[in-house]
Length: 342
Image 1 (tube, one colour):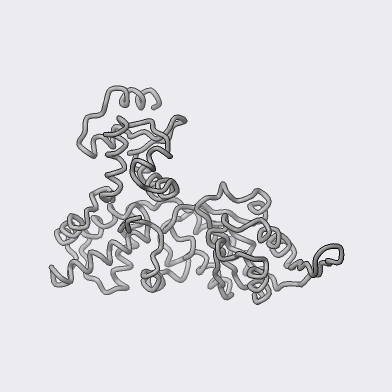
Image 2 (cartoon, rainbow, N blue to C red):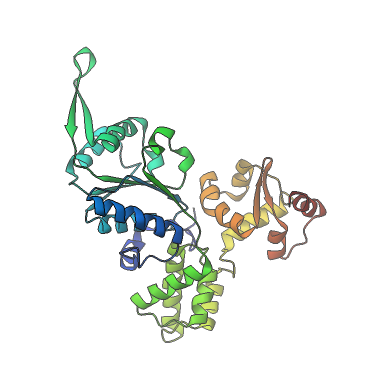
């Protein structure tokens, strides 16, 4: 798959930048006010009781701050964070080694927790509920189970697909928070904060232009800032003005809504090949040579947020706004479809 500038997934080469720009406390964390307020009370109560925080489940689209919140929780609680992911936990022994290494008050962060297998999940249950690890020794009739006591810890699970978590696992989390897309005003504040940390001279109107194209996602905002900074260093003495930003985005093919050429190809395919839809996801994936999961996780959430795409029982449909954005007249049946559902 072609690498995309506005893909909210974390790229390997961005880890250092991501660490540099990551806020270290709830006070520094911008946006998600309801979560911050609730989490602040949750943390303070646990600190007063001098107990580890209850287990926390974070869900939402990539790039919205799930990992950042996990780091903040660990720091606020005075523990060490250990990080793994669902796909990395292939055997029960992998998880057992991590659990037995945790000190009291530590945080275990499992990204993509929806991808852990059933045997791993069953080991997690007593660890989460009773701070214990049940280990089976031997095989067959002679097999026996021994219980190892664990230090009390906090499990933070992160997922983009909460529906794929089993009900027993979801029920074992003391708090569940949904990270939503950010408002442009908060994205603008994040960009200005990142610019200060990176020592990038940034005009206020340029920050607004950046925020409008960041797909309401902090990770995308920071990546765009980095690219525009590079453009400014080569063409504008390093100062990011609104003119510099607009010229950079024209070169990068990112429009005023944050859509890149790949987004536009998907909408054009839907409109030109399928008369705006409805069309099934499998057919749309085949027509655009994209994976189904990529369309569902990367394209659709933001296009739906913008009102350019709609999911119906019969398939995906391009909205009148999508037609207008691409400069194409909407067919009468598409217009009537959306008028009738309004």
